[in-house]
Image (cartoon, rainbow, N blue to C red; front, side, top):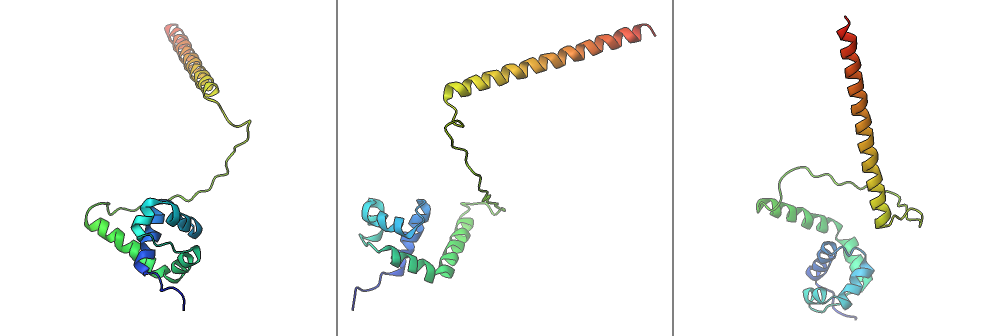
Length: 144
């Protein structure tokens, strides 16, 4: 016979709570129902297993999309968000995390100081050249 089924409202609360707290996987959500006091309170100490959570997600895809859409409509109606176009960048960039690539704070400070001094030298050189060209042009025009 087994246990009675979980109320879909409770599983929806768990699903939304997970997304608000960056807990995406069914197994991680299951762990949170055992250890996170806020999650326990929200579900009334219910502890669905990961298969139940995953099955709920799989069986209610369209309902979950509708709930999210109606939430956005509610937020717009309450003027909590603006009705503008939002673009999300899903770029994936390969990280460089070798020991050689890691820069300590003192090394970074040296790099910044060196960059600033190089930039200052470059600007001074450009100004000197500009000034020299200006003086040269004045001399050339003085004889004509």
